[in-house]
Each structure stands twice: as structure tokens, then as C-alpha cells.
Length: 225
Ligand code: DC
Image 1: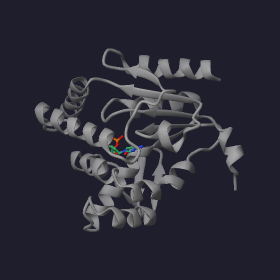
Image 2: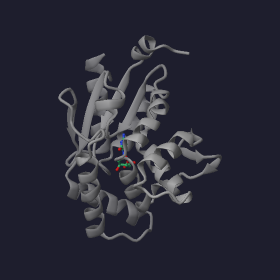
Image 3: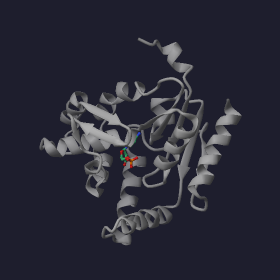
């Protein structure tokens, strides 16, 4: 068992930001470059929303959701997600589960139930965590905190193009409205709201490529070392 003081010497890069900002892609690429572990914390809230749906638990039933979140057998393997041994990688990425994740995430019992699991990702040689509260709550002592964002219109455009490229139907206005309501829910909630902490560097990606964003984080990491 690793104690807290030895855990805190394992470096964490916390990348927080709103939905569809591209932080997942950037975080994964940074983790690959540094050979660090990667935590997609949003996936955990998506899994809770998915499991609740399967078990007929409403997304507003805070205590039941907390119990459910404690009992889940979640496994990440490469880029695949498993729940109780079933592969649910695509199922949790649907627009419905994006909304569900944002709804279940407002409840403190859910957030508390996922704490230990998130901390367990902090393993040598280091971790890149992406989400909403990586730097503000889960890894407050992260050596580098990035707040990665882009305008909501740009994020909606990117999501629209992604869906079109996959041959899926997409409606720009609906995507924009969904993102706006998720932004509002994620940043207005009382439990671990999305905020840029004073010690986080702002990375505005409306006008920059993924490669440039990755380079920004790597440069900042080198400076902070
Ligand atoms: O990053 P994502 O879009 O997969 O996250 C889905 C939802 O999960 C998001 O709308 C809010 C919630 N979430 C959270 O509350 N805290 C995190 N650290 C990550 C995600």
C-alpha cells in the first residue's frame, strides 16, 4: 500500500475544461508523450449514468446513485471501457449519456463514491487526469493545472463535424443548445463546479490545433519540473 506522502511525489497534470473542448484528446496525447497514466474522469460519470439507466434508477436519485457508483465493477483496458465485464465503450459516448453524466455528476454522493477510484490512477511515473475538478478537488496538489477551453460555438462546430465524419446525423443548433445547458449545469452546481482555479494556466484552443495545444502543455510541464 502506498502512503499519501509517497503518492504526492508522483506528478499529476490536471487538465480541466468544458464539454467538447478537446481536452480528452490533448490529455491522452500528453500522457502518451510522457509515458504517463491517463484518467478520463468524465467516463466515470458516464458509466454511472449508463448503469443507472440499465437499473431503472433516475438520474436525480442522489443517494441511490451514490450506492450504485460504489458498487460498480469498472475496468479500463487500452481505450476500452468495461462494466461488469461487458464492453460499453461506445454506449457511454452517446449524446444521451453525455447529458446523463452531467446530471448524475451534480450529486455529492456520486462524486464521493468515485474519489478513491480516481486517486488510484495516480501511479508512477505520473498521471494526466482530464475532467472538471481534477485540479480543484481530486488532485489539488497537481504539479501542473491547465484550464482548456474554446468558445461554445467552436466546440459545437467541432462536435458537428466529428458526427458528420462518422456518417452520423447531426444538427448544429441542437448540439449548441445541449453544450450550453451542460456548460451551465457543470459550472453552476454546488458540488465541485467547473472553475478555472487561480493556479491553473488558461489554454484557449478556439484558434489552435491539437498539436499546438499538446505542445503548450508539454512546454508548461517542462517549465514546472
Ligand atoms: O468530460 P466528459 O464530457 O466525458 O464528462 C461528462 C460529464 O461528466 C460532464 O458533463 C460533467 C461530468 N464530469 C464531472 O462532473 N467531473 C469530472 N471530473 C468529469 C466529468
